[in-house]
Image 1: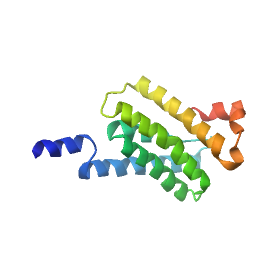
Image 2: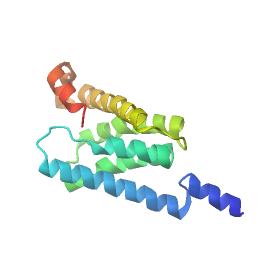
Image 3: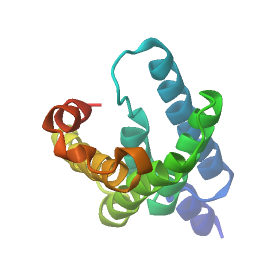
Length: 151
């Protein structure tokens, strides 16, 4: 029984896992909200890195939850929920699941994390630019696409 409880703590389940999960969601939504209020950069998306970190530390479904809830909460705080929220959730949800299934519980070097985040950001930008209404086809504008990558 003691081993089962210890195992649950390690993989993010149980009370400790939910506390960590909520902490990641609050951090993701809060940091995005603050950066959107003070930044003039068009595409500040810290939720990507935080959701990927949650997927590595807590598991794939937690990473997905952090990404989806992070966008729902931050868009609500910014009073900007709309159909794009669905595509933002898809844009981070799929990479978070992939990262969680491949790297959950493993040691990931900072350099590798940067590459994972870069590829995830590229995926996010493609989803947003390909499938969201007024932005359809803007991925063809290299300046907009490239300047969004670091964020």
